[in-house]
Image (cartoon, rainbow, N blue to C red):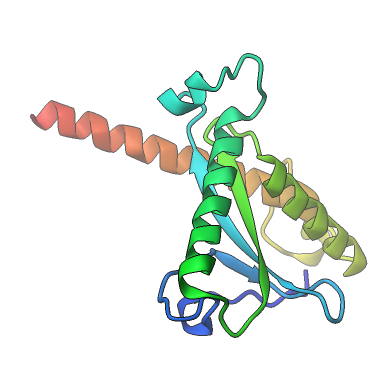
Amino acid sequence: VGWHVEKELLAIGLYADSKGRPADVLFPPLKPGGRFRAVDVVVCDPRSVSAMLANPDKVSLAAASQKERKKLLDHQKKMAAHGPGIITFDKVPAALESSGAWGKSMLEVWVSLKAAAKKAKLQNYVLSGQEHTWAAFTFCQMVPQRISFNVAKWTARAVLRGLTASIVN
């Protein structure tokens, strides 16, 4: 999409006096003079006890909302304890539920990624020879599909690990 993504956020110093990693992806400012966005991805289970206690039948994305709030609270505590580092940034908690649902902040990140892809005039993946699936030919189709597949894959691996452990014991 034309954005450079920093892989190792520890060395950047987003928090002063701390080696904690505040995010998974650091996006540059969208406009000159803007702030960086430190996107902190979390996958959560909508069937967890805490999500069930939040009345998920009445509150959509209860698990994602809880995790996003917790990430912001943790960030506020770290800023209070350590202070800002050398880069001014906005913390963006991006929750994905293991059901495949995306939290509010994750959807906001996605909107900005789609806008950047449109601005960059990304070509159809098939025509440009890039990796694609039978149902995903564009950036806007491929990325959500890859994210969903990876969440499903890692959930399945955790289940298999648990089953294997229970059979052995």
